[in-house]
Length: 473
Image (cartoon, rainbow, N blue to C red; front, side):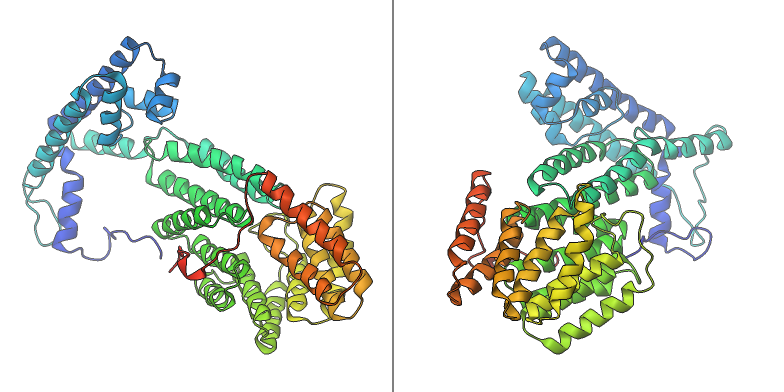
């Protein structure tokens, strides 16, 4: 999945590839045409600015009307950003200018096509050298100008570096922030990233921006899954997977499969969860966090299927992968695996398998994280550990403690919608045993559901798993 490029100084290129290179540098043979095209774009931008001001709109107001950012409008008006025809059609509609702007855009496209046809007349020999059409003017200055154009950017490395730090910050906020609140922030920054896609930038900056968009889309998908918003989650995962493919980012691509595995697991499609987890492992870079996470996810899916042998094998593999890892500087980062996280997954996996051995693991997690809870860390992981403990205690016949642990988790307000089924599983097990705590647990669970419904996000299981679209099929 790595980047595919031309080895200009090494392997011999095919005639078609060399022709593409020549066409790509065709502006050097037709400088006047290139200058004419650039001036035409700037003229169109100035025309837009004049019409906008005549209509009484500033850039902020106009940006809202055409669904672009103010910075994009500013770049378009000076010819630095080149939006598609749909933008100009919308501008004509907003400014009541008939089709004058779109018609001018069409004329520019004709000019560019003519330029490409002129460039195609360059003769290319079999050894990849240009035989005819000498470069006009000073060759060295032309080459320097080309290099300057390639390096030109309206974004800059500082903006991208801050966005990359922001992605890490949002991933660290995942464990402590209600998913609906964090999703608002992720959406806002995704919109900002989208506004930069059409800006002038270098190839390296373009790739970094797409990678940032992929991470944000992946995190947004995870939050949608937490909120049981399956349609939105699928769309976000599709975006993240496509961006990962375009940038050759196998780590993000593997996370897409693992995230979908968790989604289908919460819907009860455990065989599919095993399959997706295994695919994630095949794409995951060796020794990476996603390699460990997808292995752990596979183990949880085997546990739900009641496959003890496969479950214990997955737990052992996770232990082997985690053992050489140092404790990370940012263990709360959602996409960074750490040894402590492995204990949490072991507790869940054993609890789902009905193995009483889950109890000490769950207690270890609760004891370790409760101290950190005073600093606002790990509230959701503690709630999940309480559910694991409740399930393990039920398997051990310690019913009073099991009910207390489950009620603590449910009343904490930290059980996200995608984990409501885990709470309900314990409630039903307690009711099936006819335990006196059943009514209190049921009331607590119903309160949890009502609180979620009041926030406007109904917790609905998919009625038909086969109707769900999968981003990574």
